[in-house]
Length: 392
Image (cartoon, rainbow, N blue to C red; front, side):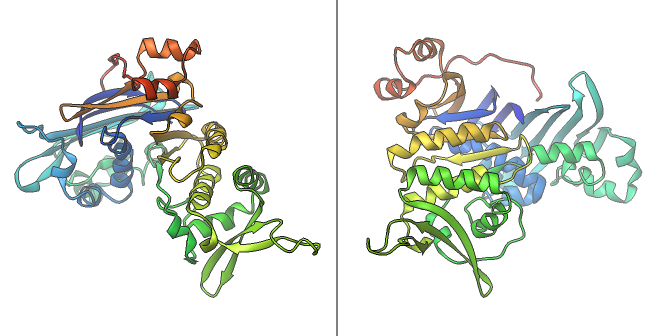
């Protein structure tokens, strides 16, 4: 999982240095920078999967990514540390930018091994020259020009040839969900992807895969049934070249018949039911262990009674994967521990992120107030950051 994040001049963040755990709950006002923080990981994912140029162009150019300031901060810097059992990796890159939307990779560093003290392989590039690189990369002479191209990241290609770099890239391949109910309502085409897409476009295909794992699928149905009365099952039917998803409801027929259950297509379900269903599929789907999974404001359109189930499922999912959640719900954050909360604040156009300050943390831990109470009364405050070693 990603344990350390160090970023400079990305969107509204000037300079942040934050440690992450398995479950991370982002709290802050509208426009504070919660979504911008998630986009750090999404941007890295897109740059390593689709290429740096595509990742930047899809965000309307380098000027939209670079933090605005009267005197331009021309370099965007991102550094991430990954730690899992028996694996450690450190990855950073610097993008320099100039006038008229021009940019280039100025520096890139990658180190992987079992621990920070047992680095097995690494590369570093500055400008258009390798400072250090494993022999395997240098042997591929016909690929060097592509690696050194200034609009690419070396890890994007190096992961194809060296398994340690491939493992690091997999750990940086996060999953980010903002489920649109109308996307689930419509019949969907068949997809080959193994994981749920960001907005649920392949929801039906993933549900059909999940049915093969009876344990996780039964947990999904049980969690849904705790919130939506009468729902006892979920199925996917193929109709021509499309997949149609249906929910089974009990006690809907006349009282004088034996079987009062009926199947309803998702176009007959409420927004709240569909958003909850989409999030449960995201959280119960099969993902590589310790990979990052993020949900934006999962409480939207949900009845307050559903938040207990949602928090239980988030805790369960955090044992398998690293979770980041953004929320503005006092009732939801009250269900998490103080050290799982990250406060995002914005002052003078600059966003900062940190753990809850010491006084508020003590009040929560001593049960004088819940975190939700403090959010309502005075707002949660960010504590002073403790600087650690710098990747950048």
